[in-house]
Image 1 (cartoon, one colour):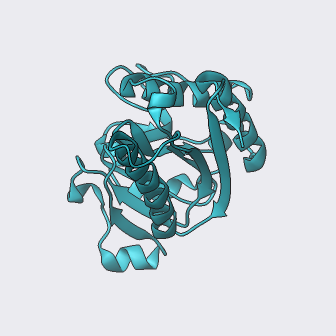
Image 2 (tube, one colour):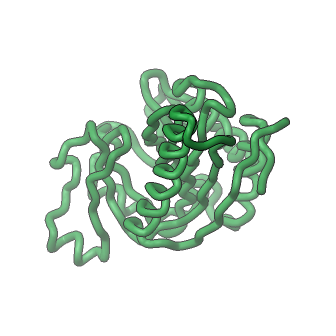
Length: 231
């Protein structure tokens, strides 16, 4: 029987609130797995996919450098943006309106216990989604995320990944530039990479997309790749 996944469409949500929600679901799964191993509980963990947008925010992963944020507190306030140091892997990135953010809280023991494969599946779901719109997404050797024209002078990133996993339970995930205001990326060294550009679906196609439509396609691609049922 296919694993079941609860899908939460939580819309535009403050970053801290979204992070707290992730942490709550993540902790529930971890605590349940520990209780099962101790013989204090039974039954499977639950799996969740959170789809949302955030107000303007910069987040710095565990391997990031503070100097990759090119704004001070006053400048952040001027741009109505916030900044958080968080517990995912990776360096600094930007989230904002028009960007589709996906947080999978999945117990990979329901699927496969391979973080590398997990990351590639997330990338593949985005690659297949943008292909529906005629955009060719690819991978760039040594880098995570989804790229356009990799290995050329025009290479640019359309989707960033940053994840955390414990006891095979995941959190954090995908930042997918659909209608994102790309100007905000000029205030950071995106993902710690100084010589690579960023892009969005809107930038590539010349007009804004229906975010709900893109989300529906991405959800279907995730379902097909991971083989789960939606609740």
